[in-house]
Length: 267
Image (cartoon, rainbow, N blue to C red; front, top):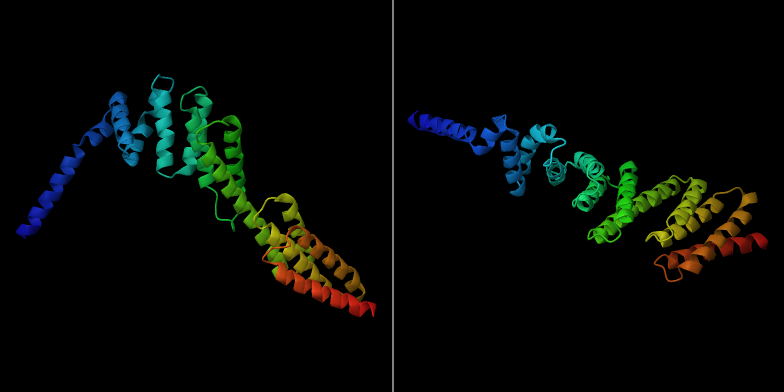
């Protein structure tokens, strides 16, 4: 009992000490200047959750005042550091609109765009946020072409584009797996047109050939000759652009099957 009593007293002492800390005094204070100074100190120390509590109290009070620009940048960046990217993106855009000639405008614009990049989901999910991220990052690149953040911005753009490419080719593959070969061919055609520099380009050419061959192979006899010739045309396109591809051996096997079928039909 005595030991328990000592522990309880210790906890009470800790609570009382905490309630009297400079942070809690500032939090309970009606003095915006005190809260501003404490929020600034906590932000600089990387104690973002505590800083945010104070900032949320004083942002309205400093609107239109000289300190507002600095406070609003810290406010947006605090959300960014806490990985609350919806709010950081919104707040950085708000900062950029309010202070277009600020010496922090470049950093705010980049972090605002990067916030939308961070919201992009994995490739298998809806990619609306990915398109938004690309738009914001490209806007930053166009506005600040000489920025110190350009290299990173370009990397982020490449990552988002790669995600969209992966999404597109996986959709085309799904059509093929469901044996909807016409839809698969159209999807691979669109992929090849939309992503001319994609790392999946050789695979798309090969899978278009494979889908075309499988379509011909599963067609009525009257349609087989024409569709085999179309498949052969897709092989020629694949071989023209990717003669040394990892898919070359498989493509050559398909070509051999096509030529054997066409030879049988003609004989």
